[in-house]
Length: 150
Image 1: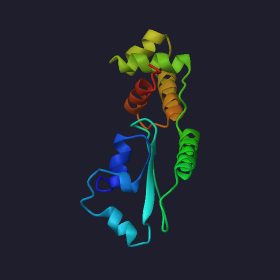
Image 2: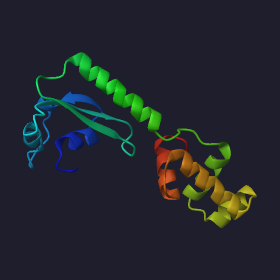
Image 3: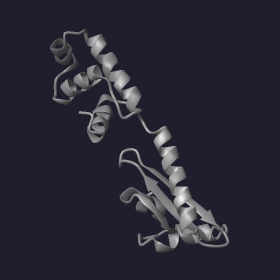
């Protein structure tokens, strides 16, 4: 991935650009290899937060994408990204649990502060993670902070 100029561009940028406008290095000649498959003209599309970014590449054999085609593709990718993005809202009880754990409290301490069992606290952390499509509590906290939920 790090040698693909579309991915390199997409990690640092949002929006849509033509391959012919890319200024990122292509040391492995990825775009030259694409032309070997008759993928001569293309665009890169990138949207979303750095932790949940969608990057796409689209190509044609015969001509550059028009501005309208670029806009249409970008809107379609943005729509798909938004439809599959994690929920950007958590319940008040999930936020309270995450805040306490994020502040450095153990699950036992956080549960005691909230007046609930450790099992109930872990359930809140788990459901918050499910809503944000994360695997660990640390990831959930990080994403909740990025979404300004904490």
